[in-house]
Image (cartoon, rainbow, N blue to C red; front, side):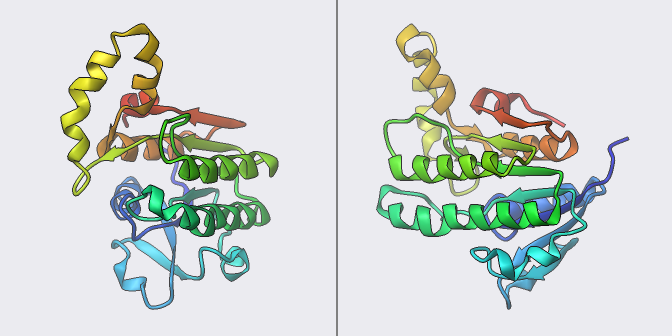
Length: 218
């Protein structure tokens, strides 16, 4: 039987977070989720709200314990090249705050959703996520890092039409590795991979690339 985990989660009202929390709660895990003051009612049922500022570790660091797992999901909605500055002021800043808070609390396992790279576009997004990964490694935390490129789900389905092109590219040797790394991943696979990461803590830093995310099931 799966051991119940104490989870502290950021981004609980976002695209992935609001779908992940019910799964974790249903599987017997206790979830406390960071929210902006006044947004507590937006959290899925079963999660305990913790008010704070995701960009300021001091506003929530003393509320992380007794969590053994920290799941960092904060990020700019609908990333695009026009949001390059926000990738640093929100995505990277929130990741650094989360890593600092988790380290202070002695969290045993940190779960972070990063992005596949290298890729020909969204360079600022890749750079911000890469810096967050480096900050995580520098603190010496055991961690699982997920690296999807594009997550297919409700409201995010336009790349479905491109899937045949990824299939073709997968048969062409010079394109095969990029096609595997940058292929869109279904939301269901990302959620399953996150549950897997929580329930199977890594020793050191474990990277789940796109092919790993597509295969993960619980």
